[in-house]
Image (cartoon, rainbow, N blue to C red; front, top):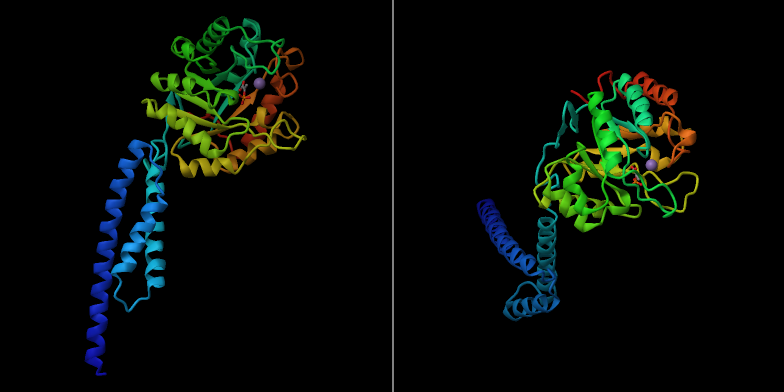
Length: 362
Ligand code: PEP
Ligand code: MN
């Protein structure tokens, strides 16, 4: 064969490749359209009967030189790629990185959560008294912390344990935060309370036990206050993301995700902190991610290395339970730091360079 003929054939092959590519992408566009119609009807994407029909038609039309087996094999690959395409499209959630590449920055007063310096959220497990909140808030504020927490509706394992002060607790938390120029977060457990709570608090927390309380998620999606969404005790990362999507799908995209440890067989810590969830969540979603170092570990003695680890893997903030007198706390007495312990943790974090002077305001 002459060199010219060889080059000519190669040139034709290149052209056919491009034609094939065009036809394959044309097919992919059709598949995407069908996928959209299917998702509207809730129909399964993989349809084995339809796939068999298509393969049979192709084999019947095959005139070679490819064998029927090869035709089946090639087209099966194309069908598989189409399914992947439909799956990828399904995963285009509002909260996903694919939908929005830039980090979401949740602005709460002077604070920015996400895309910058990490924030610290301090304060007790439960709001108990005006005095307890005042002493705790005054101390952590003097350390530069601007974000105050405190539970008013406590989802307790036992119905005989302290259940929280309810709306009275929200008022105490809110007034304390205002007095100190802080913002505040508190857990809400009933959908009908979300709107009311927004009058008092700056961020609505949805706790681990309620991560899949879909009515609560929908109610959180209807308001225009930031939501702190904690990962469920046994929830997968995907389930947490879908829970966030419930909120975003109702128009509220001001969501902070929280890794707070999951249930495993390990008993050395209260929960097992899933540290890998932090970079995965940040890869999959544009939402900020904070780590609750108190509920994940349940232990004060490892809080510093755990806090460092969380910040090292990219957490946008930490939740640290702090109480002016942990020994008499009405909930989670064991894990709450007292005020000197809080200061020590903060100065160690500052010394390590993980936390700056002005926390989360840049
Ligand atoms: C809390 O933050 O007060 C709390 C109860 O945490 P979790 O929902 O993560 O258990
Ligand atoms: Mn607690």
